[in-house]
Length: 199
Image (cartoon, rainbow, N blue to C red; front, side, top):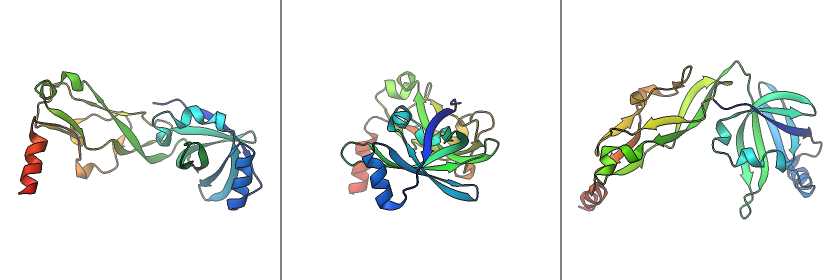
């Protein structure tokens, strides 16, 4: 489980497109906080306070403590606009969550032991079908990743949702689908499939 990182922010008075532009000219990032049937809060954030977190995997699946003018509330990042050239953050949306609530969140799928898979050793290719998995979990116990172990997996076989053990307190949001998460495609399988499609 990830530790809760604090992000410092300040209330901003200037709102709307013009207000956001003015905030950015001052070298800070405009944002908004919404949810829990409360009024939206318009904020500004020093980009240095979020740069490290922004480029850490799982930014949208981590609980943050957002300190606005010294008052802290727990939030999830829900959307971010980036500059098309520099990738600098232009605007961030946060959603309030209660620490004791259960939330839906997409967690990155992390593959391990692919080099030990018999199917890979025989020339098979690892095919990651789902890079994230939607789960329901306590807001204060969001897993940083869902681990899929490929040790022992042969070519032509796949790992489904029901094949993995989720962390304690975490359940799949759509267990009825039993999605294929990862498969090992047999050597030549891709070419064969393309040939069959062409026919």
